Amino acid sequence: QVQLVESGGGLVQAGGSLSVSCAASGRFFSRYAMAWFRQASGKEREFVAALSWSGGSTSYADSVKGRFTISRDNAKNTVYLQMNSLKPEDTAVYYCAAQARNFWSAPSGVDYWGKGTLVTVSS
Image (tube, rainbow, N blue to C red; front, side, top):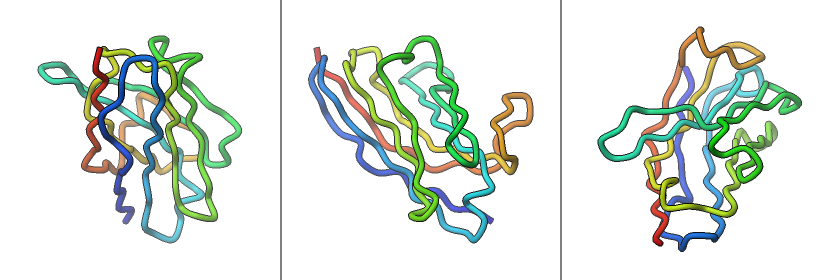
């Protein structure tokens, strides 16, 4: 069982930066692929970024590529999402997700979800 708790959301102006974190409980965090999703008001939840168990393999949605960076610290059981050059359309609740495999696989689904943290980007 893995529990995920996001933090670091808030209000930021367009063009600014923000980092959100996801703290995981459980003994086998380092074995999980991790990802960030987001859901804007009135829209479906969408994939943002993912990384492998070691952090050596990453993937990003086209909409955030070059602006967002996903990383993890297995010693701290934490995954991060650094967001730069933020746009109003990045406004959403950001969710942390874990998958019980070494490399993220979209068709495999999500095994654990966090409850989310709200990021608001003002214009």
